[in-house]
Length: 107
Image (cartoon, rainbow, N blue to C red; front, side):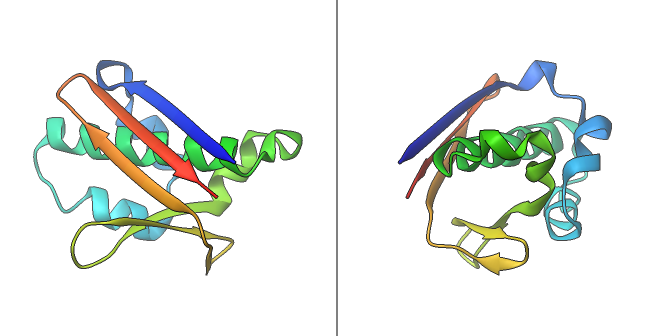
């Protein structure tokens, strides 16, 4: 399966979306003091969560499952996915410009 999501960064409410981020994701976002950069990172993580949600066909579980999907990054910045605290075998790519963030997940 494949999942894709695109997010308009200007529409991101960082404070609202921080509520669905895990502690690890919040720590990654908070590495940047620049609000615009934080908004880009949150948009990328959110797009990643949505792409994984679609890829894993989690629609029957509802959007609350987004809290269980965690987007982490290795030492090179490459994203990887954990579900309920366990790393899962999903390929994930996240990219963004100043205006949009996009993520593709492949299982």
